[in-house]
Image 1 (cartoon, rainbow, N blue to C red):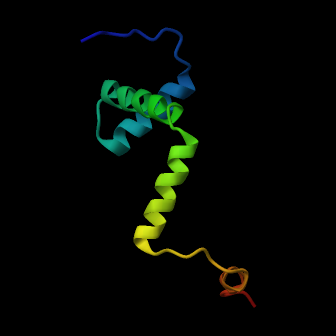
Image 2 (image 1 turned 90 degrees about the horizontal axis):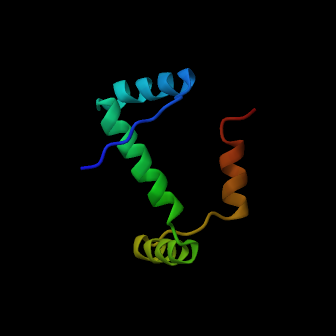
Amino acid sequence: MASLTIKGLPDLLLRHLSRRVEVHRRSLNSDVIHCLERAVELASIDPERWIVETEQLRATLALRLPTESTLRRAKGHGRP
């Protein structure tokens, strides 16, 4: 397996990564690999295919888009 050395890593970025490591209970190396895999996956998403898959899922789950009145009631819920 290949190795990668990252030089000049900003301190703030390292602190953010360190927090993620604690939350996800992974090693720093594993978490960085996970972040890189996600970044590559996101970059390769085909929007047209994503829309088709989303519509298919919506049809499978029989989800309906909220109406204007439903949204208004939800926004006003709990407000004086």
